Length: 449
Image (cartoon, rainbow, N blue to C red; front, side):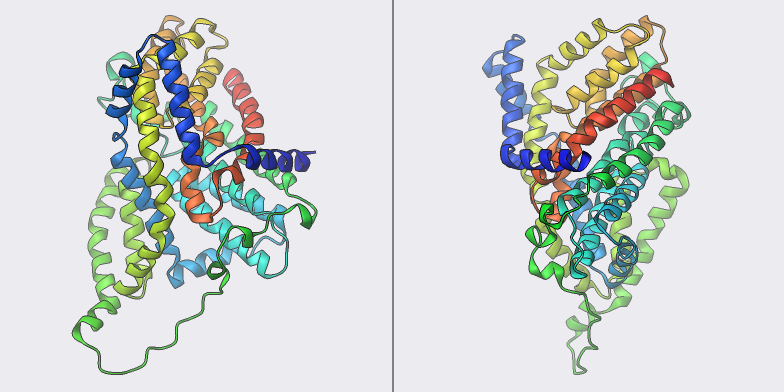
């Protein structure tokens, strides 16, 4: 049943969903018309869009670097060997889906950037290895197995909302105070729910794996011929007189010295902030330092970086559109309208579940946990205080909602598409199945725990 449902939804999504860029434009106009229905003029909405369109430039650069540096790291011989060792484990498509999903969810829990890069590279390597051995593998299912990792990132150490409310002087500090991580990511509503999903989601993906080869979309339909070539140890360079510049470009010692220099800040940062302090800036610096360590020379690292830049094109093209959407939905008052509606139909018993559902709806238009919390949080916290509810659990519920509908939001699948090939619609059919199942699990957990 799950196999047929997954294939049917995948085929449906591939038929009806346009390019992710077009989806972003459609969401833009949905937000525009909703804002006008709420009393804003066309001119006002255009101004709100323009004011917001460049608000994600910093994040866009960070996300692009995460993608490029991560891909460049794996292009080193040592990085390739490490991924290949894990990629040898699965013997069929179902095992591959389960392995990739578990690894991705765990890595996303530690840090979403690490999960995104590590999961996508592992999935591609698993698919290519199985294909070389003549084992049929359904590539869209493996892409979905990577993307499901994002479901639990707000419950982990890089969750935007838990980290924000745990920071002194955060935007709602006067309203709710500082909430330590022991009350958010280390609360049962967070970690127990994540553990349940960590078991259920990979198993479901394993059951969704097609049994017959004719139902599978193979890796060669998504990847270029070069990506199937087995990486070989490079032959020793021909000895001869080299120029000073050639010696410098090929000198591993330069990489190693610069790697040691980058460790000064990385060690100091982790000593003071720990894992909970990981952000994209430090993740990118770690990726750069590992690239320096594992690549044979500056020339090798530069070439790997250049080869990886194309994978970031989707981010560079579409992030400004979503920034504009965020500008419209926040400035037009739509966030307040949507959040207030869910508050109005809630009771003390159902409030956490409705907080989760409202955050899930808003996340389709504001796919940023921190940004969403800054505009939705005040309404949710004020209502929770009126009902005398647990403010930390409200933050957890909104975080789960922010992560939940990412499963059907093309915004966050773009980096995975950049690494794995294909289009967002190739993967979203399978994640749509998991959207409904995970939504039930999270809702019940918030109601019971």
